[in-house]
Image (cartoon, rainbow, N blue to C red):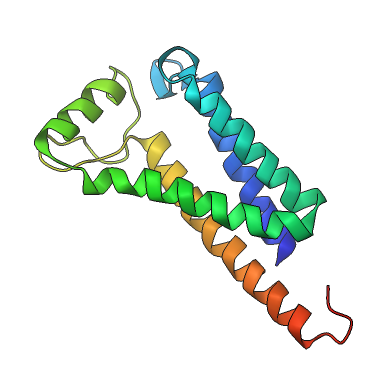
Length: 150
């Protein structure tokens, strides 16, 4: 379970890295580099990279950091759907719906439809959170049933 969780966390880190570098296929934009518009993403990336590194190299600490960070990140990302007022949707579409931005579902003026990059990001955050939480619970149960503990 630890290996699967680590792979998920590393995939999420790689995907999130695209937010910093930007990535496109010809005229189709997956994501524009956040350095110019959202430099706070670089700090967020560093924090997440530290959590992934802790999970991989310092499991006793990382097993707590990874699900905690993923929960906070998920709350931020999924919370956007709860703020889906017409003004928020218009603002989101104006910011992310650059000409050529990749969408899996056509953007709407009445429902928040995230672009393809953010849809995949949300999915990876959710998967990483669930896997890391399951791993944490399993490791705690194993520790409780082990006569030697952790």
